[in-house]
Every structure is written in structure tokens, then in C-alpha cells.
Image 1 (cartoon, rainbow, N blue to C red):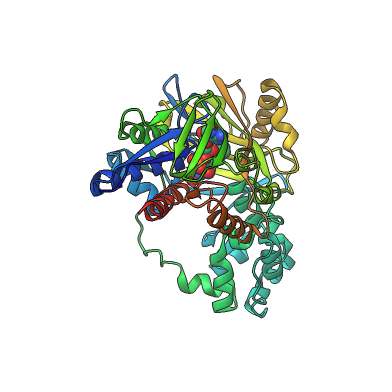
Image 2: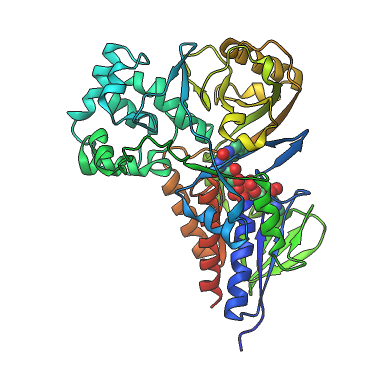
Length: 466
Ligand code: FAD
């Protein structure tokens, strides 16, 4: 008979919650004598997932959706009984704001890379010279094999600056709230590196490997999912499935000590939890603090985090004088705007907005405009309204606005990220056996990536304890 073991999870965002869920599932299925505790520093679960219901609107303060083709999130939704709550986004024209003008995203763009010649050649998003330069991708030799390089540098080399600045940068840097020129290719889009190595030309590689879109007149299905009752329903439903007494809120793990047998976790409440294995599902800044006696965690000082503010504004339909038929736009650095993106939420996610109303969701906080996040609500509101007015001609004040500041909440995968994480994991295996890292600072920021990392950490813990 195996002896009883304690597993502690640090952090109750989606990573920690999914780890707790899958651990308890395995423990029950395999009849293991293990106990799971999850310690969350704040007063609520969900971390960056936060839904606000107000006057009939469903407002996502953090993530609003996830890519449906990435399976771990759909799998978790099914596990916790939310599959009938999954909703796909409404599709429509996406726009890009370049040099202060809205342009349609050319048809056939994949992450900004053109895969169809005609829409690209006829697009007024690029100059003749810019179009010619993008064509170099067909003739340039494949790049040298390197361990990593800057995402921006990689695309600039293949397509030139114009394609990068007008389309690729606004699309990709928004996903990470980062600077494309600092970001790591291998930690964010290693598939582009491999395509280029295998096919020489990225465009040719994409054309060969992307699934063919069916020649149908039917409207295409959206590629994102959210939950009818708000993203936070995933958090609540997962929590419901956990054993009673699993979760401790309002208590931070302040320090972790390695002992002869396992670990002691010193909590902000003054209590000490014993653990045989630990999953750290908190952002990387936590590690040098809780493991202050281990210098190698200072490697994380090279992983910066950026801040953003999410601004949701609700209007009467009549307030919008220039309605645009589409789902939103991203903003290029060449535009004189401070918002970086705007989703027409009422069109992309109609279930979030009452009839006759409009819900716009914008972001501010480019890497070179971090101070905007510290302005007052009134100042941020004015900045956003001024920008929106330029494109949509808004004649009435919003019915209400909701501003959510996310300070240092977006970990930046800068060049060398994957090697850094591998190095830290190697040191941990040697010096802190049974402690595992999972979550947005390490191997992917998207919700499905975080859930997948939670599942992987569960496998590691079970193997370690066996
Ligand atoms: P977190 O959600 O950060 O949770 C970590 C938890 O650990 C927190 O609750 C924290 O309080 C706790 N903690 C920290 N230190 C301690 C400690 N010492 N002791 C105990 N607890 C501790 N992804 C998408 O897929 N789609 C999107 O649309 C999308 N939009 C986003 C929009 C915004 C504004 C942001 C900020 C992120 C967005 N993301 C999106 C990314 C995604 O939301 C995050 O990567 C993901 O939610 C991170 O989950 P996590 O559990 O790893 O971390």
C-alpha cells in the first residue's frame, strides 16, 4: 500500500485549476492515496480570467476567447460539463488601421502573411515597392539554422519592413502585448521557422500546408470559442468539480524550503503546508521570491512583463454614426493612435450585448506606451474615445465604461526564452525534484496552452511520486 502524499498547487488561475482538476481525476481513477491543495493569493480564482455582468452586457476584463483548434480548452470544457456553453465567434471583415486609415485585411492572409496573390497585389495597404519586397520570400535562400532569433527580424528579412509594420506586427504583437522585434521566434511561432527550413519560402510553405478552405458560399465558421455565460464560467465550473477543502483563498505562498523529505511551504497566514510535490502555476516573478535561496531563478529577471489596460465601452446603437461592417481592427505603429486594437464585441460575440446596443472593447499599453496604464480612468476613457471617434464618429457619451488595468501581467517571451526555461527546468530537476512549473510565463500564453501545461505538470507529479 502506497503511503499518503501531499501535492500543493501554487496559484488558482486556469493553469492551477486545470492541474487540480486533472490531478484529482487521476487520484480517483487510480485509487491513489494523494491529497491536493491549491493556494491562491487573491480573493478569487481565475487569475486573468474575469467576467463582469452589467446591465445585460457580458464584459470580459481579461481573455475573451480561445482558438478552437487548440484542443485542451475544449477538452476541459467537456470534462466539466460546459460543452453546450461553447459559442463560436461571429465572422466578418477584420480591419487594420494603417497610417490612420482603416483597411480591409487582405483575403488569404495567415497571421498577416499573404497566401493569395490577387488580394495582396490589389490591396492598398502596401506600396508597389513594399509588394515587390514581400515577393523576395520566393527567392531568398532559407535562413541559417539557428537556435533562436527575433520574430520581427525573421519576418523583416523575408518580407521587408512594410509588410511587417502594416500587418504582421499589429496582429502578432497584440497577442503577446509585446514588441515583435524583441520577441522570440522559437518560443512564439516555431512553426514559421520550420516552414521556412522545409520549403525555403514561407508563402509556399503555408500554401502547401494550410488546410484548403472549402469552395462554398456558406459563411465560414469562426475559429474562436468563448462561453455563453462568460469565460469565468469555465473557472466556476472547474472549481465545482474539485473536492471540498481543496482551495485556500487570500493566502500567498511566501517561501518554499526543501527538507529531507519533501518541502515546506510558508504561507502568508503563518501556516506551513508540507508537500511531496509542488506545481507552481503562478507568473514567473513569483519564483525568485519563494525560492530566494536559489540564484538560478534570477534567470527570470530576463523575462520582462508588460502592462495593458482593457477598456470596454457600451453605447446605444444610435451613438455610432459611422458603423463599419466587421468585427474589429488592430492598429499599426504607423498610426497616430494610442489604442492598439478594438473589437466590435456586439458583432463578434452577439450574445454579450442587448439588442440596440453596441459594446466596444479596446486595449491601450503598447510596450513603448506603458505609462498610459497608470493614467486615471477619466484620462484613459478620453484617449480611447478620441481614437474611436476618428474611425466611427461617435456622437454620444458611452452608457458606461469599464477599465481593467493588467499590470505586469503579460510575460514576454524574448529571444532565448525556450533555452532559458529549459535551463531553469534542468536546475530544478537537479536541486528541487518534484517541483514543476506550468502556466503563461513558460510555454505558451493562450488559455489552451496554459491548460495543457497544467495537464503536463500533473503527469510529471504522478510519475515523480510513483
Ligand atoms: P494567472 O491567470 O496569472 O494565474 C496565476 C495565479 O497565481 C493568480 O491568481 C495569482 O494571484 C496567483 N499567485 C501568484 N503568486 C502567488 C503566490 N505566491 N501564492 C499563491 N498564489 C499566487 N489568452 C487567450 O487564450 N485568449 C485571449 O483572448 C486572451 N486575452 C488576454 C487578455 C489579457 C488582458 C490578458 C492579461 C491575458 C490574455 N490572455 C488570453 C492570456 C491568458 O489569459 C493568460 O495567459 C492565462 O489566463 C494565464 O493563466 P495562468 O493560470 O497561467 O496565470
